[in-house]
Length: 381
Image 1 (cartoon, rainbow, N blue to C red):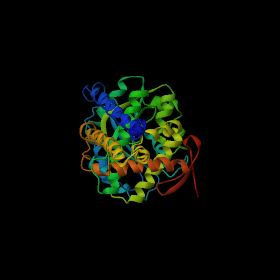
Image 2 (cartoon, rainbow, N blue to C red):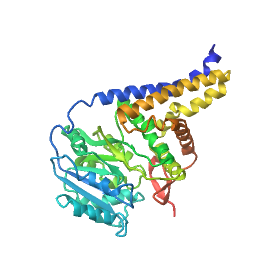
Image 3 (cartoon, rainbow, N blue to C red):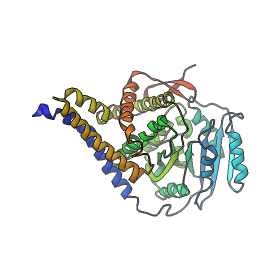
Image 4 (cartoon, helix red, strand yellow):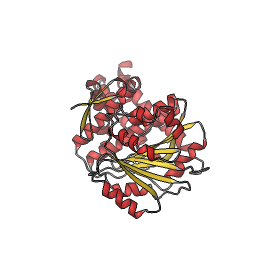
């Protein structure tokens, strides 16, 4: 009997984790019952480091100018080169929204191997408000974004507010393979962490930080030597005694058509970054991955029928859970359209998890780095 049940036993951790993530998501989204942006609307300074063009750059930037926010708004773009091709887009934005406080800082000064953080350090002296928001250049937001994010700061213990992100429009299979990972892996993982232990990290797509909390960790300078500046910002603020809040207003990560090699390279960079940032938790996460569970069930099953039954059970539950995430919670419209990609997505997740232990080199925006223990990086010449 035990031999017959073996394939079902090995899929149990992945199966249980899928169901746990669904329960955690339901609990979190049920808690979002208050009106969006209730309370005061403090002034905010949005720092936006830029390098090159993203998909829909102008519309991404303009979405921050179209906010239903009563407080003061300052938008600061930070570039390293006057020849950056995105600068004319920023100039056009300034012309189209003259009523907004929009500025551009061009400064090539390097403060560490993380060039994005160098841009933030160079732009920060111009920030006038007590709430500092860092948003990636490929992010687009809804009109209620600022109201929703800033409402959390009515709690004086909140030092940082971060936001979940999704990709609702994908131009091809390679980008769909990456985007479905947000729905099938990243968001469930964040919500499980939130319910089980609270957040001790931030998500780089959107990070709103109280000036006092930022100062308590030594400012952006404390992040200049790390690759995962988002994780480090959140973790350092958490360790300083501040609370991290997760906002329920999704931001949209806009993607352009890419080939599979580019996507795989970025996935491996993320995996290696997570591995050095949270080594214990990242190692343990391997037991919840569906693909190795399905593979092991196939290898140890007493018969092909038994193996098939276990795999069908695992993916019936997984596809149902992912579809519920997509349609009910994330509302990105990716599933069930791209549901056929889920086994490939799970295979990619496993191989990037495994490969992350076999090296410390990553590529990021045309530069190559080696990862050091603790998440610091050193550029390779």
